[in-house]
Image (cartoon, rainbow, N blue to C red; front, top):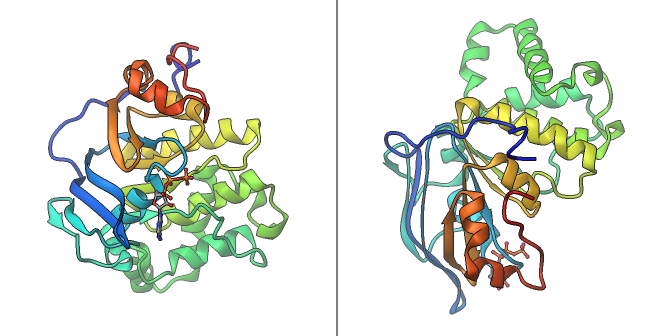
Length: 268
Ligand SMILES: Nc1ncnc2c1ncn2[C@@H]1O[C@H](COP(=O)(O)OP(=O)(O)OP(=O)(O)O)[C@@H](O)[C@H]1O
């Protein structure tokens, strides 16, 4: 499907990376979970981190989002060394993660959830809206975001009443409220039905038009359709990187996936 109806035009890399990791290493009580991982993410790029269970994807993700401190290595965001900054600080700078477990408030309406996100201290919109001091403006921005993600008709519904897929979409809307320059998504398609996967994939493609996006994702079809570049981890190390067709032909990648998942040649 990726060759017939591409979800998006692949973006060429240009200029300095917005996010750049060098020589990341993470040890847990002597166990090396991540070893010498370096990666760059450019504006407009969608990059996936894949690999079999236990490969170190979550650990790398948590290092990049500052939820874990690296044992060694550096991370730079827009040229600034952020290795020692905490997650709230990097979120304020524009490096924002979404969570694997949906982080919406079930007893608030869909619009209220987005409004809460717009009022979060790390929200870049915060000072802007406070300055205007207008509730209507806040509602207008919330409605704009809901329209962007296709949730307008659900604005007044309780988040608890949304389908699982729509909850994930709402979660992405609350993340977008922070106006991220780089968005990191942890398994955005986890637990979703086929229809929702298509909808969320389109949303991600749209969201990535004016920002960089990195995702950990197990759904290889989504990865093939959406991502410009794929980084394959095994036992904490990068074993391959490139576009889907390139990595899926790599013998080491095929072997790593043997018996744990499948990987197709990108044309299937
Ligand atoms: N806090 C921790 N303490 C000890 N070991 C850990 C810790 N977190 C992760 N590990 C180990 O590090 C390795 C990499 O784990 P990680 O969760 O990053 O892999 P993953 O690729 O995300 O796996 P999955 O696809 O199953 O989520 C595993 O062997 C795991 O047991």
